[in-house]
Length: 627
Image: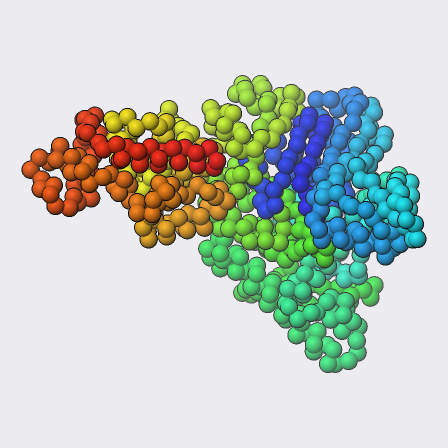
């Protein structure tokens, strides 16, 4: 399963907002106070999937309190419904799991299951107090049970429907929200197993709001236990915490304790390598700490525990005794490096708010690389206003977050926004935002900085052909503008087949239509492969080879489109003394075309040459329309 879409209504500064998600990374780009954090909090407030990470960070305790979601400007007397909903996509593996669960537990053979379904939570607020919570879903189950031959519908008041929904909700991707990573890592945590608590959309019984110390402690232990279970699994030799740590710790057999020590040593080495190698890679220097040591012991109540110490040059420390910077990186790498898909094959969804915004540029760039690694085992949504934390490959899935109250630069309006008045948060796909609001560059300044481009009156225009160099550029312009071969294409030159990266980033960033036209020689083929590898799906079907577009395998270079007679005529017009009876050199032809173009001077061109340029221009135009 994966989250395909979230919808929110009346959530803080959000009147109504829809966020469509792709697999991998989704970047939320926006100004300060634009509402990026509000969107992350809204996603985390989807309680059916949210992991109880507030147990790690007490400062998050109020985030999922519905009364804290009331728009600030309406807190005096809010009477409306706050809605948080999600669309969940199911693949064949997910559907198979549901069918198997229904068959084994209810002797129920389900009919076809949908490929996606919605779960909506409605929080009814009266007089600024929550009066009710309604869980709604569009899922309906039909099937045959036992020896029945005719399918019937199972409604929400049947145990079969409730049981299947419980199973599906328990399999939802867990949502991990990290506003920061400066929460405390305990000196030790209990290894006693604890199941994840989740809500069901049909359960209306009274519940403890899980704000008690015992509940938070249980959640904290469960989260850390899950992390260290993943660490043990990453070792790759089939060990588990229960069998290979807890049972060995309880054993009186000396051999079991030696085996336990060996396992703890391997765990310590793995965490040391993961955390400190990541530190070195991101910050470019070794930390003062040297290694991580993991031990197992019993607490005062006789419960099996794990404890973690940091070894420095002069002894062992608790994590809380290290610097804020060290603690941030340690917890970031610990909590993200050991994420994994669940047994049902679902990836967790990780939310990061302005990660490492106080780091220097090279460290942020390295952190961005670690995000690419993270998306192999988790889906990621993160906010940023730093161009060092934007990956051009993820622009298709990026959003520009805008707060309409910030459209005015008046200081009084800014203060009103800070106080929550007239706030209206929107999220627009990056490509759509650029196309519809090209003048609102302040909202996308991080992307412009990434592209190393400062906008002017000469903005990129649609229908652009990026060509290898100036010789191709002037040849095409000469034929189009001086010889009048019809085309509305714009040509932009590079500095060689391998020099088009910056131009590609520029046109991707502005969401403009473009093609890359490469020669059919070995270098052209090599660079096409590199561009497709570098830019991935963003340049799919946009790199075209000259022989393919001209439908002539003999046309390897643009100069091959000119008939020999035309080459002689062009060179003779500029260099009358040249011996055109011999082979015309490429350099002389290029120089002649440039000068004729500058003069706007036509020469008599053979109709077959004009036809070949017509074919090329028309093929490029059609390819642009399809790209």
